[in-house]
Image (cartoon, rainbow, N blue to C red; front, side, top):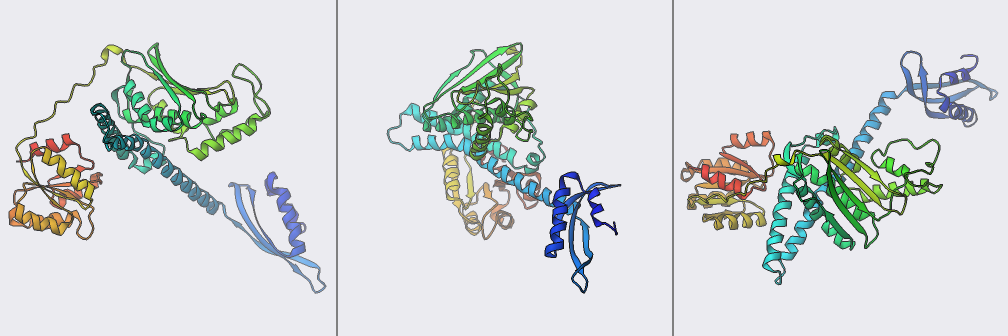
Length: 473
């Protein structure tokens, strides 16, 4: 190598040799070299190298030697790529989070708009309240699941193993996507069998699966399109088909939808066959189709949908005659024997219990007002405070039996407020309840150590509040 430095090219991987040789030749002319390439190391395999060098000239201007360094940057480059991958995953998670939260918020917004109309009929108002109740439960459960970011980064999702009526998940999914359907003036036809469709799994995740597929069908179907959802049961499995007359899928795109990192077909466009004809324009249409999916952000992602379906013991596939011919997504899930399904018992409202004096402390005006109205409806006497100092002053006067105290308040937080309330002689025997959006075990432990008797996670349901008051002496 001292006689011919170019022999080092024999250790450079073949893909980089021409580039390194060209850079070395340019260095002899312009006087500098700064390049990265991959080198085959006899012991450690392929290493990533950064080479920096310059020629040393003699008195007559001739090149006497080359001086420089070769630095192994394999670990640095891997760390940089890992950080870039983490950044991409964070962006994908935030986009997915925003989409998932908007899904239940859309029908809730529509229902609230309806309730604010003076002309709303009692029947419409009842249905609107029902929508808000269902979607609020859906949203609360979703927020609980999304708190564990690491679970998504690692691709680990824990499913509840409940006996779920699949028709309920489908109806909730339709309701979630209805604002999108109406905005695009799509026609939706839902055809489900009359018998129950009990599935062992997670109601929230099943709803996500179908709302995602319906959202995609609506987004990639021209205005005024036709979307059809039907379900059939055969051999212990239910097949749910979501069909649209939208942009359609080429054979290559059908494969890439559930595996965006899959390599392209080496032979080019797929040949004509039973799955629909392919042509030279498929590659361009596939590229534009995938770009459209990426820009629109197809819900929680079809790859995650596929994972969720598999976790439920099912499978998903996509069918299409070709571009412009519409698409059909088919989800197959195992069903429990129909005779093992028992509809949920009607929830009998709990008696409100004896009236109590309750102090509600929250810096969120809407939350404070809504909680106060609910408690007064149950027959309790309610005293409110918007900050910690006001809570201490009013507690001395009202002598509440129960205090519902928000933790995340400015100036004096809920923990400090609780400690000061405990020091008041008038508050001996009172029950302090932490009402907060923080629901991790560490949050509960910290609340109990600060003097709280109970810990409720927002939004607290009427049933949870009633049960709490029953347990209070």
